[in-house]
Image (cartoon, rainbow, N blue to C red; front, side):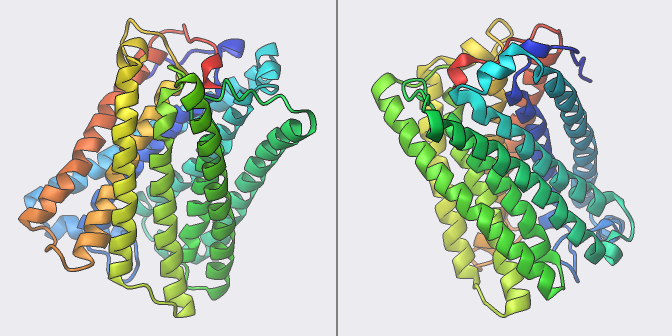
Length: 405
């Protein structure tokens, strides 16, 4: 397990929240096994009773898959919440330092939005853990949805407050350094808003109450649109600076942040569509899901190709991922894209290809298309272990990187 350093103060970086986000994302990759391989009649997601019933009647391969999924969810959820607790403790002490005041007056102020991003992920992880391990949860789930909406509303207000303060400072006094903006670091707020959107979309997809679905769809739509607008603006101004000044080496992983953003927005769209179908009789056919998910996956793969070549050009692996290299909290930004690709491939195969009738579920083609999702998942687990060993095996953690601005 991790040997967590204490009292880092000015040596802490808000981007360490991404370590918790990455572990939470891996929880979702293991939940995909249960989501698409375990029958769950009567509700759109598998619950404890479905898993127990499936395990009792399943063949050995499915029993092994269920066992791996449960172990993965449990261990990574523990890691996620441990990293969250550590970050909250260190962040509270970091706020008392001069380094925090300098960060709040620089481009890097948007790194603070990693906090609501992680909190939104924590709620999603808690919901998955509840579905999988708590008997009878589905019988009271309608009582939990208002609490979930209220929780995401508070997280959304926190994100809006942090981003609003950043914009207010820039609009009032200027000071945004476009030359130092040679990365996609400013897309991080869009990722946070997208995570909040998909959180609101969960009650919209799962509830049987028309009011809950309507409120969930409305709030999910608000943060969905905010995420898209922020991402577009941030990507344009970031790309402009990259073309003029070259890509900042330490912030090179930010080129890939569009990948998890698209996965989260894609899942939010599916959830919103499902809620509109069940409660408002608005129908979206399987061809729509196939085209949407296929298009999003194509864009993600193109971004992955460009980003990987950029990382190689900047010699990022040797510089920041090796045990001899520098320690950069921004390296944890590499986990989310791989996790997002794994999740997106699962959705594309099951909701796209199988849903449209192009391949048979559990056939040879099904497993051939699913294999990349499993490969991305394994690669990200290895990366998380490597990063945690590099960053948390000692207390020598570098200050927040200036290049990440």
